[in-house]
Each structure stands twice: as structure tokens, then as C-alpha cells.
Length: 229
Image 1 (cartoon, one colour):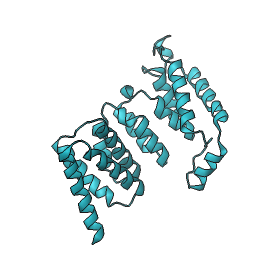
Image 2: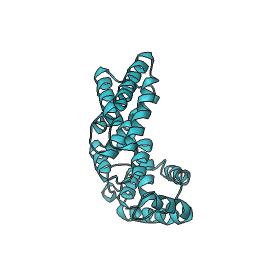
Image 3: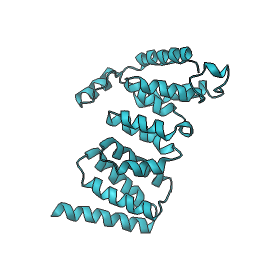
């Protein structure tokens, strides 16, 4: 997608948010201390519908439908659009970007940049559910993130692991030990959002089988005894 077309498309998408505007939702976020530069209060179902509309629009479009020299990259139009939307300091743009980015095209370096730029809990959760869990290197990133000391990194890591466990992906011995150690630390940690995500991941870990269930219960007993002290 050439630069002019991309700019026009982003502008068109931003204008469409006016039709999705929900002042009650936006005000509720502000009341809770969530302060985006620009927030139309569009609901997630409406943003998802917009994402599906855009995916259908570009479904049969090749990155090279015209001269390659006119393209912003060698990637698909959806990739280019997601990158452009993410750069906008607008809630709806960032959420839509996580819904549109083709997971198989996103390189680890770009993923790292996006993670560094996440500034709100909602965006972290949407990135984890819409995109991070589908990355080809999702497990490696998840274990890297749960070992971080940053709230949103840990949050995303545990959310991704929850999804992987729910899909029946069993960690190897090293992964098990790393997960249990970090989950134990997170459940004792200062971030309520991370504690909640870690607990969910432990619960899904326990659903992988009887052995996993026993290990999960052992972690929870350790936390419980620690709290009783």
C-alpha cells in the first residue's frame, strides 16, 4: 500500500469512529483513571466488526498489486495498515491495529517495539488476546515477559500462557519450572492485574492433566501459607 493510500485509509478509519462514539463508555474510562489522548468510547464488538470489514476488503489484495517501489513495505496491506494505526495516539486505532496485524508477518523486533509503547491496561489485554497469543514465537515471548519487572509485560505473558494452556499446549520441564516460579512471584507481587492474570494461568495450567493439577495446587498452597504468616 503506497503512502498516500495508507494515509487516506487511516483518515477514513478515524472518521468512522465518530459513528461508533459512545460518550458514556469514554466517560466511564476517564472516571477510572484511563486517559487516552483521544478516546471515542467505541465498544469492542463494533471495533471487531470494523476489523472484519477491513480484512474482507483486503482479503484478495497482494502486497504487489502495483509497482513494488510504491509500497511502504514488502508486507501485506493489512500489515501496513496495522503499523500505521498503531502509530496513532488514539484508543480505537491501537485496538484495531491489534485486530488487523497478521501474526505470521510480525517480526519479534516489531513486537518488542509495540510492547514498549503500551501505556494502558486495556491495550495490553487486547494485544494479548487479539495478537500476542497467535504469534509463531508466542511461548518464547510469554516466558520472557513473565520474567520482567514491568506490569504490562507480566500481564501479557500470563494471558498468553493461559491461552496456550487452554489450547492444550504443554510446557517442557524447564518451562514448567519457570512458569511456576514466576507465577508464585506474581501472585505475591504488587500488581493486582498481574495477580489476576497469573491466577487464571495457574488454573488453566492445572487443567492440562492430573500432574499439572497437583503442581498448581502446590503453588497455591505455598501462596496461602505465605499469606497466613
